[in-house]
Image (cartoon, rainbow over all chains, first blue to last red; front, side, top):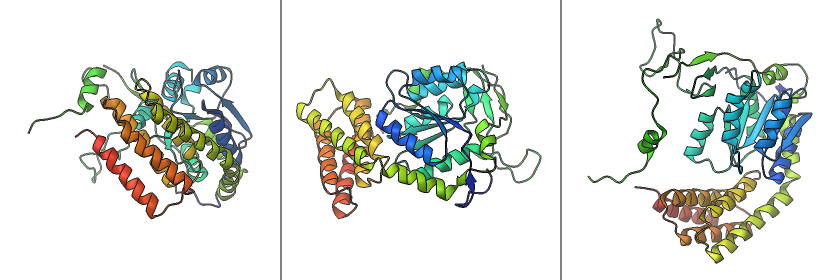
Length: 200
Length: 151
């Protein structure tokens, strides 16, 4: 990431097309007003993720803001579809997911479906714009494999290169290698995080 | 077994935002804040309506509709989250948290929902102002949620 933005820095969203997806029409209008305030001239509002998929098949979008919780196809399914089922460069479109109740499980779900960022309410225009600016300077690589497509989810430091002093035991390699063992079943993962009473 | 492939990609958004022009961050936030303020009245009306629906649901106590309580609480939270509603947002978040926990555990307790809904009404009637009363209410709600968390 580059230096933090200053209030006097300029943000140019005049040429950007923003897709807003929320099943609540009032929330959609509010979001639209905020985005317009940022200087976005072209925005498309969709009341459902299914309607948004039709738009995306027809034209290029530069930024997507999508609510997590929606009936039928929710925000997570939509992002998963975008990342895995659409051709390049559409599948690489930056996505900000918006959530009211940010339970840990939901944040993890957003991360694992391939969202670029999750923004939890209370939502202020300053925070939302900051996330958009972060997205513009996002230097994360995209990861593509059978089970995931989206920005690199690893947030730990890569640390200095392997042959340089100063690396820590927890630093990650920039190389994502092939998996060394079979993927776990979802039921096994569920069992790992299921709260269970223990007798001490 | 999956082979992961990584690649760099510069988005259109990134290219467009690096173009000269646009507006200062200060100006963009100021305009967006003003636009958001224009929705406050209708937004708070939606919050009040959602709270009325929760109160009605608490009165009826339909045990087949626990999921709807979470959905109504989440709708209230969504709208309250656009505005500076301080303790109201905190109480709505707490209601989402406890209904989510109770749905997951299958141990539903209407009194826990009741106390949240009453706190929401008190905070709303008090103008969503932060103070000793709202702090005490939120502390009480936190202890209710804490009791519902799995050991």
